[in-house]
Image (cartoon, rainbow, N blue to C red):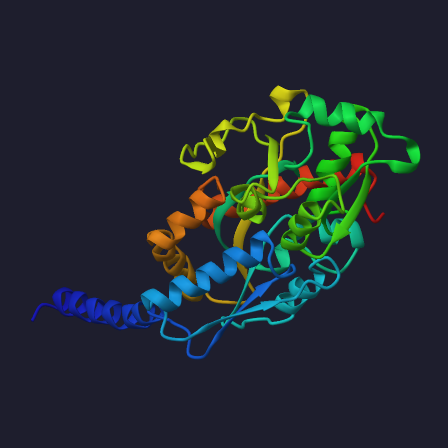
Amino acid sequence: MHASKQWAIFALGLGMVAAVPSAEAQQWQPTRPVEFIVPAGTGGGADQMARTIQGIISKHGLMKQPMVVVNKAGGAGGEGFLDVKTSRANPHKIVITLSNLFTTPLGTGIPFNWKDLTPVSMLALDEFVLWVNAEKPYKNVKEFLAAAKAAPADARYKMGGTGSKQEDQIITVAVEKSAGIKFNYIPYRGGGEVAVQLVGNHVNSTVNNPIEAVAQWRGGQLRPLCVFDSKPLDYKDKIAGDKSWSDIPTCKSEGLDMEYVMLRGIFMPPGVTPAQVEFYVDLFKKVRETPEWKELMANGAFNQTFMTGKEFADWVAKEELRHKDLMKEAGFLSN
């Protein structure tokens, strides 16, 4: 056999041998239960999404190992983030993120940054809606703000929200500045509790995510006044009576100069391998194809943008800078 031909065959053999570990690496999958960290309280948007994902994976057999949802809301979610950060190279732990990915380290100074984690994928973007109790007479933003401004100083309107110096309070401060009004901001541990407090008239308004208040809207207990997005929501199915998500006007069109959407994404600990990341990217692609996921998206009026890889990391980096500016304007930075 000619020497050059022998070398070509030998080189091809080496290439095939080298390709074997790579192919095996691509087939990585969990070998024990996966801990799904929620850096927020139970009943909120992140918790609901995590538990829906858990149910979808179990129902459709998308993963051989079980997924266990664990809420770690302490320190405005810092407890959960630090847990994942210190679980280096552990592919059996993932975390669902919301805006406290940025607001918690910026507002508290804890030793954490999103770059301490491994980005996996953006699942969706969540909306924010200004909600009031349906028993109240105001039917739009103008009437609500007029009532709030007319309230005496010792009976200032209360705005309920999740956590302190986080997205709900950032939006509240922006509303105050835009409308020339002051609220008493009341923090709670999760969006589920926030909705309950508004139903009970313990607060006058909230800026909850759609999924956190849709049940109460459907039940005739709460009323949406406006959505903090640049355009009306796309969902036209009727939710409450003859009203759909698409019927809610934007807050900007109602005179409130504030727009805000929030990340719902997945991260892993530092030091995991590309094959381990790819397993979860593929897993969440399968999750997004199920009818249960589509129902969640419609019920919560989510923006269904999906990103992975560098595109996702670049988006997160820009959002960190935007939140730094928002928190600086609100006076919420820790230093």
